[in-house]
Image (cartoon, rainbow, N blue to C red; front, side, top):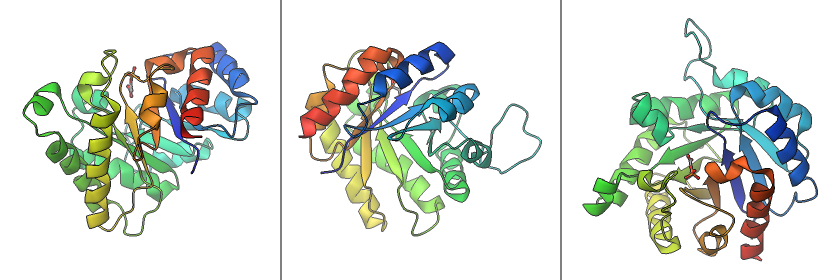
Length: 246
Ligand code: PEP
C-alpha cells in the first residue's frame, strides 16, 4: 500500500515562522505520509530552502498562460521554477470568489502538465446539490471538463473531492459518503481512459478524524485547510493518516 498523500492548504494564512515550525515538526516523520505544503506563493522560496526529503511544496493556483500582461498572476512555469511539485487548481473558494469556471480550471490543470507539475484539481458540491442527490453528477461533470482538456496520457493527475459544505465548517463528510464519491470519480475517469491514482478528501479534516477517512479503500489522502496551520497538530495528522493504513 502506498503512503497516504497529505496536502496542506494554507490559503492566505501563515508566516515564515509557521513554515519554520512545520518544517521542524515534520523532520523524522517523513516516510509515514507523503506531505505537500501548498503555502502562499511568497513563501515558496523559503519552503524550497527549508523542506527536507519527503516533504514537497506547492502553489495554490496558477495562471493558464506561460507569460504576458496579467498583473499579479503567476504562471505554472514560474511555480515550477520555485521547485514546486504540485499546484492546487479549482479550489471552491476560487470558483466562488474569483468566478473560475470548469473551463478555466481545466486550462489551469493543462498548464500544470505543460510546466511539469502535478495539478491537484478540486471538485465539490454545494449543500443544495447534495440535498437534491446530484452530488455525483455535479462532481463528475467538473472533472470531465478537466479530463477533456489535459493531454492524452497525462500521468499523475490528483483530484481532491471537497464538498463545499464541509470546508471550514467542522462538518466533515462521513468516510462512507466520501468513499462513494471517490469511487464515482475514479470510475468516470477510467471510462475516459485515465487511471486516477490519487483522489483526496478535503473538508474539516483534523488529527482526530483523519484515521477513519484513511480506512476507506478509495480515499488516498487528504487536503487539509485549517488544521494545517498548527505545526504540532498537522504533524500528528500526518502520523495518524499513515497509522490508519498500516
Ligand atoms: C480547504 O480549504 O481545502 C479545506 C479542506 O479547508 P478545511 O480543512 O479548513 O475545511
